[in-house]
Picture 1 (cartoon, one colour):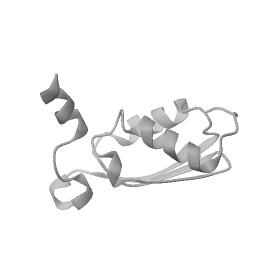
Picture 2: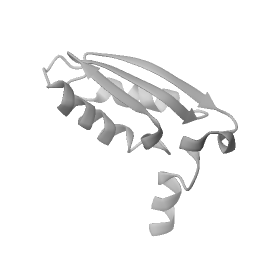
Picture 3: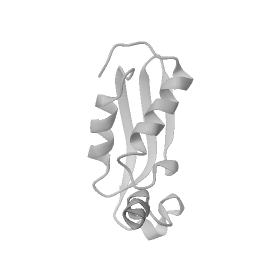
Picture 4: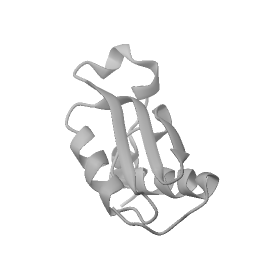
Length: 94
């Protein structure tokens, strides 16, 4: 994690952009930043929490991260994980 100071609002935007590259449903997550400490919470698909942790560690301005996500084995029961995933949309457009 980096020590570069980034304003909280800007850091939230940066984190959202970064996690959009690695998660199937990034819009289902709540992201909060305070003085370089980022908290991400909400549902993710099974196996995506580690991808999220790695991306946060690589994101400039994140001094520390708290990942409080729930990995869902049965996403059909979670409204935020419904619909076509970002990865599926990218594959169709390729």
